[in-house]
Image (cartoon, rainbow, N blue to C red):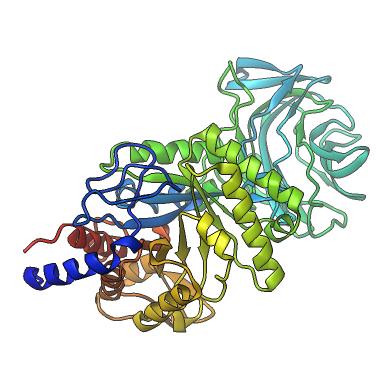
Length: 546
């Protein structure tokens, strides 16, 4: 056990010299932990009791990994600040979600409880269609080069030209999947290119069909047959990245059930009902079960569903914490370069925070690289703070190779999560961690706004692997910072190195630690967990024991 007397001497000295620079954690929702300041971001903070300190323990949640149970409620509960990475900006300032909420509106579509052995289906009359919104087969990150469209289908009448789905830009086809002129003939159009396929009998009874597309190659899977039927005809290597509505069933006569769109090529996997395993399930972009008669167009797989599941998982966890929206990627450089787009973006983010009851927002835009981009980034931060007001928690994630935002932007942020890690191997050691922190301080970022980042993964310099994989592969030591995994030697942070970094953060008066990310660590209940090491060090320094 550490020497309590020595610790108290050091602690008192640090308190006297650094208490003005210490960020005291405020949790806008719930009751702040003992010793924390009761207030809102932006308000002056004076500690009531400078002998008790709360450190920020921040980490990111990626929805895919939460969904496949790589992130436990206990691990989330061990953090005081959680960032759910779910959104990205368009160039014009609108906000898109990586897993859009595609609740469909129905036109002349009726819901049927039971039809020919299937429960909860929808009927199309030829004048019917459903609109799944403009979030499908389109992304702020670029065009789709693969996807799967799957559904159960019952054809009442074969109608030449009836659409199973389509995206149109006025009279121009973006992508369309249609019935052909003769029974059992189907065609896929992407732009002006058309490919066709002839199927087994679809004209009677229920059938499952799965259309897959990957870099210009289209295939059709029918019923349980996992042998694909190839389309004939040349198609482009990607779907035009045009933002327009995804319409299902226009001119179609018949019934649909269990309709989905996936960003992967999945064939007949997961049919009846549509339930995929692990990663495949997480990549479903929209899923209409049609089981809710009051809302048959409900999308059963969306970012909002994930958010609600995260909140449900957190309900049983003790302590107070923020849950904030994380925004990354997309067309952020174009958005930030346009003052009108920046204003729109800030307004959109504020609406999302208010509508969905987030505790704030985090920027993870990687990264500005020149003077203009730093100026634009700073202007966006200042605009966001102005729009949000001083009471909404607002942070940004920067890196030692890219952190020189303006003093005004620094002032506008509650803290900066500082990515003191790779992929460069040189960034992992403790000594570099200290240097990177000193570099930011010298530039003008106060310690009370620096949340020092640590990695929950390893790097070769070019390859990345999760700490989770190292442990599951048989990692025995908690003190070594290299590990050979699948024939390659990775540099990472061991439990002891993470502890050393956490102690440095505590002793030097930084705001806390950010980790990337919860999915790459092992569960916090395991003694080899890096998050557990951080939590234990923070608890010790806040409440030292013999």
